Image 1 (cartoon, rainbow, N blue to C red):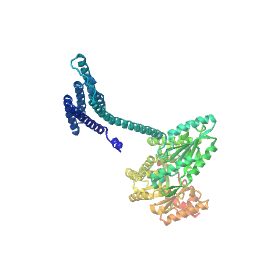
Image 2: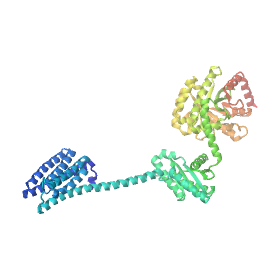
Image 3: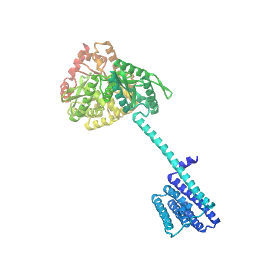
Image 4: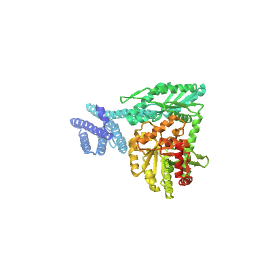
Length: 640
C-alpha cells in the first residue's frame, strides 16, 4: 500500500518529500555527532556542527514555507562547508568526514540542479586541493590522530546517514525503473493493438480490406503455382437498415457479430472473411476448382445466414445477396475482382435478393452505360437537351381535349432521341431525378400557362413525380415555386403518383398532399391496377383520378379477364366518385368499349402520340371546331 501511495505522488511532491527526509537525517546525524564531540570536549567541531545545525534548521523552515529550491541549496551548501571545515580543523584528507563528500554529490545530482551540482563539486575539489597544498607546503598541518571509539562513531554516523538517504533515493530509482518497464509494456501492447486495428475490423474482429488484400495476394501466388482459381464473394445483407431502425444500432451490431461468426464457420481456415464496412463483407476463397465450387460455397453461405437468430428476445431472419468474381477469368488484381464482384452482388439484389450471381461482361457494359448516361444527363441539363412532349387527354363525353400528360424526352446530340424508359431509372438511382423532375415541373407549368394566354383553353397538365423526389422533402416547395413562377392556376396542375409511393410513406405523404390540395392541386394514381392490392390509400389520400394502366386497355376487346379488371376499376372508381383515365387507347373498338364501361377520359395513339409543344398546340386548335362531330362519331361507334 505504501508503494501504491508513492506512485500517486507527482515528481515534484516526491522530490520535496525526499529533501525533507534528507534534511531530517542530516540533522539527526549532526546532533548525534555534536553530542559526541561535547562529551570529548572537541570544541572546534562542536562550534562547526552547531553552526551547521542552525543553517539546516533554517533550510527546514524554508521547506515549510514552500521555498524548496532555496532549502535544497542551503542544505547542500551547509553540508559541504561544514564537512570542509571539519576536514580543515581535524585530520585533513585523512578525516572520516571526507566520506560525506560523495554522498553530498549524490544528493545534489538527484535533488538539485546542474549548476548547484557543479558548484559543489568544484568547491570540494578546491577544498581538498587547499588542504593538501597547505599540508605539503607546511602552511597548515593536519596531524593524524590515533584511532579511537570516536572515530568509529563518526564513521558510523556518516555511513548511516549516507546509507539511509541512498536507500531512499535508490528506492525511488527502482520504482521509476519499474514504472518505465510497465510503460514500455503498455506502449508495446498499444502498438500491437494499433497494428491489429490497422488490419482488422474493430466491431467483429474480422480482417479488414488492408489485410484481405494481403491475403488475396498470397492466395493468388499459390493459385498460380497449383493452377487453381481464386473466388471472391462480395456479400451485402438484405434489409439490414430495417433492423437498425426498428431494434436500434446495438442490436444491429449484435447481428453483424453473429453474421461474422457464421461466415467464418462456413468457410475453411485458409479462406479469408473480411468486413468491408457497414453490412458488407468480402470472402476470398483459395483453391477453388471452378465456378461450381464457388457456387457451392455461395449456397452454403446463403443457408448459414438464413437460419433465424435471437436479437433482443426476437427471432430475426437475415438474408444476403452475393456477387462472385473469379481469378483469373474476371481479373488479375484485388481491386478489379472486388469491383466486378460488387457489380454481380447488385445483380443478385435486382433478382430478388437472397441469391448469388456471377459476374459477366454484360454487367460491366451495363455499368459503363449507366455511367455514360449519368454523365450525359448532367450535361443535358446544362445544355438544354431535355424536351417535353405532351400527349392529349380527352374528355370522352364531350370529345374535346381536356388536358395533357407531360412526358420527358432526351434529344442526345450523338445518340438521337433517347426514350425515358432508358434514362429515367438511371436518373432515379443516381439522384439526378431531383433536378430533372424540378425542370419538368417548371417547364410543364410554364408551357401550359403560355397555351392558356394564347387562348388554347383551360387545359389541365399532368406531371409524373418520382418517389425519389418525395424523399427529399422539397416537393411542396418545388410545386409552389413552379406555379408562382409560371402564373398557372393551381387547379390546372395534376400530379401523378405511383401506388408504391402511397404505400411507402402514408403519414408524411398524407399531410403533404393535404397542403397541396388546399391550394388547388389535384392528384391521380398512375398505372392503376399494376401495383399493390391494398386500396385503403384511395380513401386516405383522397385522389381525384385513377389512370387505368395501358396493359389492360390494349387487350380490352380481346381478353375477357382484362375487360373484367377494367370494369371492376371503373365501377369502384364510380362508387368512390373518382374520375378514370384509360391509357393506351389505340382503336375505335377500344374507345367504344371504355365508353360502354363508363370511363370518363382517355389518351392514346387513337388520337395522338405525345407531341412537342408547337405540334400539340396545332393539334388542339385543329380539334376545337370539330368537337361536336367527334362526339357524334364516338356515339355511333358505341352504337355499332
